[in-house]
Length: 116
Image (cartoon, rainbow, N blue to C red; front, top):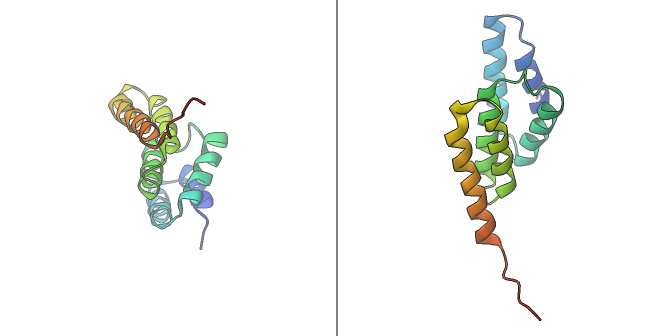
């Protein structure tokens, strides 16, 4: 089976519409059944090498699935919010929502510190 990273890179390098649709379909299938760690590895690679080339819809889907796989993970929501802010004001409301979720998760999981 193709790796998620390879499938993501192939989405970027599709030469025509027909091939592009096929590669996007394969990417979505692989992403759907990927682990949280595999999705984060994909996002690390994309952010490092293909920031502007990777489709926003694919990035959003990857972050959404990662958030669903680890619902208590504030860091992935913060990272998703930062990414959304990079793609224009159309995504600001969603970025604000994800940022607020991250803050709420951090508050919920913060252990009390007692003075000695």
